[in-house]
Image (cartoon, rainbow, N blue to C red; front, side, top):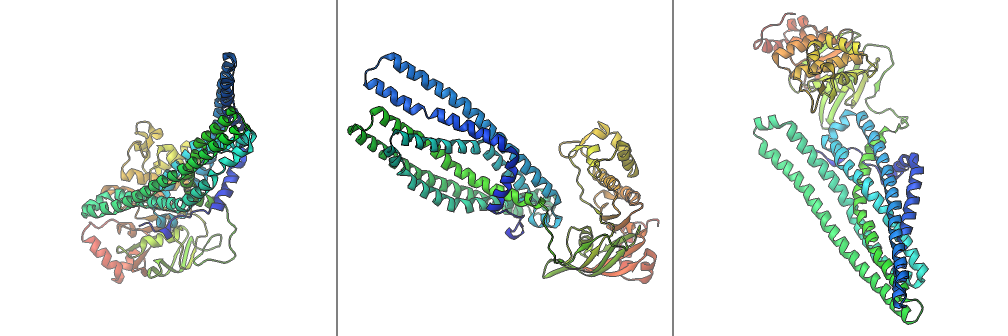
Length: 584
């Protein structure tokens, strides 16, 4: 379950603004050009009300048709000029927004790939995926449409008010009567919208987390007849997200109702001012008409600007969530204090050394207690034990997925590769999938790695050979073939220490025998810690570590442990009663 305290970080508003300034810096010239074009285009559009007022004066004065036609031509010219300049300016501004968003996406992916797996697991897949899908979609829409429209609306408002002041300062004063109502409305809306949209984003993340978990475990859910329970859980999360969305719609309705009150008050004030000024011969009917048209023309830009506050709140919430992860890519100055359970490298000694290790997922539920273990250079150590003994947790702590609560994990070589029973085939050509382990690997090196894991033959028989698209939307691979690719990546990455966490458990009996041979070949020349699902994997290990209830209870070779008639001998007897004795 995704809990608010476990979510990935969310940036503060100040940090988000600082990040945006950094991302906008390379686009300053284009941003200035877009702003200049929008100012010019908006200014051209503001010629329309005075021209229409001029037409009114011409009509009341009984002027000829030629002058009215000339004014009409000027109106058309102003409209065309406004459209051309504003169109180019909006396009440039949208390009800036897309460029900034693209760089932010890159920072996000870069940071997401560097996140500690423990942090990702605690946050849940839904939090990360909702940020890179829903939040990015909201921000992208804001960059493409909301940002240009909002900028143009603000320019129109500012220049229109200036135009009203030029006509007569009293028109400007009358127009400003609407401002207090509008400002109060915006403040009222912002106080309610900001926390509401933040809660909505979190609710969507929780919904996606439960939905993904249900889909991924569909087979198990059906097997244990838990479909109704999981449907209710997903339904409850979905209803929570829908309820928050409907609250947002109701809030918007009240927001626009208050804006209409401001429009009525402002227009009535401008028309009343025009009436008294015309009666006092202070301005002409055409000037009063231009002032009324100016204010009426503000309805659209003001509503757009204030309505886009809604999009801005949603985009700002999404930006905070993206920057919260993207900001993790920024190197931080390490603190002088040493946190509990450090991992050290660069000191002489065995390949792996674990001393006094305790670990717990929560303070009241210890999983590992007092673990002392070494793995020598080139040594293969098998870890066995009943389900829940702590084997996988120990493997993850040594691999760096989890940090010890107490004790020390030392890896002098500095690099550890972890292969589990759940491997991923990346979308794209098979050759590029393997090169993720070593981008500079040549074709011959990739083929050699495939040959080592007995995968070259079937890989070359794929529709397009090693250029065949695999992964999502590509050629489907069996569980054993996907695991062979994982071992080929291990060979290409060439770490000094490898950890296999039941890496042959999902391939079936025949596939498991193949993968056991493949694992032996891939581990050649490295230190290895093998979490053994089948005890046949432990037989040929240099040492066997037996775990029970989070502790190491036995250590020795296969022959030594069988002779002691302890926990390992009991496990071996139970396993041998069900399967033929393997050849040592």
